[in-house]
Length: 66
Image 1 (tube, helix red, strand yellow):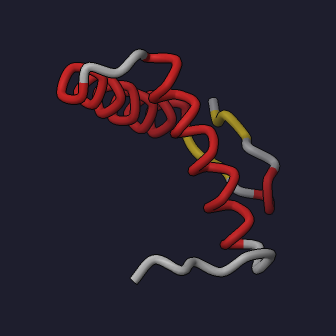
Image 2 (cartoon, one colour):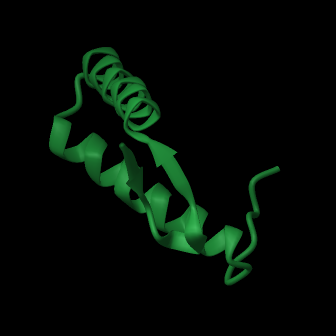
């Protein structure tokens, strides 16, 4: 079975989605431990970065990171 994400007609398998989710969750957990930050704070950062990256990919904004 394929889990469909309908943003620009992208498709990803359930297995790929699971693996990507685990990588992201492990990274957030590591950052929480490394920087003694709350999960809520780190997930808020991930959320904001996601919004910014999608806007960049859509050409709405440009990255000013050198």
